[in-house]
Structures are given as C-alpha cells and as structure tokens.
Length: 78
Image 1 (tube, one colour):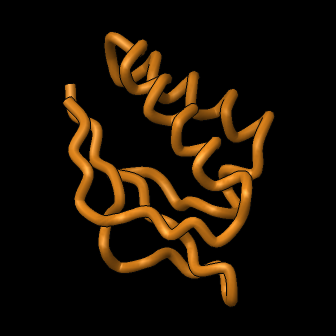
Image 2: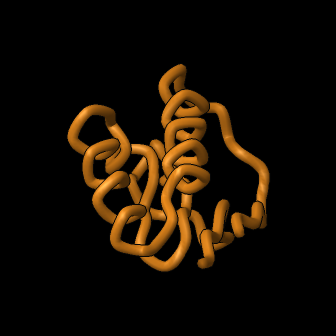
C-alpha cells in the first residue's frame, strides 16, 4: 500500500518523472527486497538522490540546500 502525505513540489523537470518511476516500482514490487532493488536501479539511472531522500518513506529535497523536507511525501507498506 502506498500513501501520499504531502504535495509534490515541481521545482525541476525530472521530479515528476522520477516520482512516477518510484510509484511504478512500488506497484510492481511484491516485497521489501524487490522494492529495495528496484529503487536502487532507479537511483542508478536517474537523479533520485538529488531530488528525493528515501528510507522509511520518501521525502522531497529542497533544491536550495539538498535537505529533505520534514513532511514525508510517500510511504510504501507491504
């Protein structure tokens, strides 16, 4: 189950595309290990780490300083 907790700040062109990829891998993953592996592949092929912080949930980063926003954007549970 995925839950959105905040709105997306569309500060740069790649942001919505990366978020859609994250939602797709979350939808297609059947367990945490598959999700972890898929997110690692997304991180290798996009600027995921520049725009998002992830671990327990996904937080969008401020472009000004790279710090994660306090409000979680997305939470994925199995």
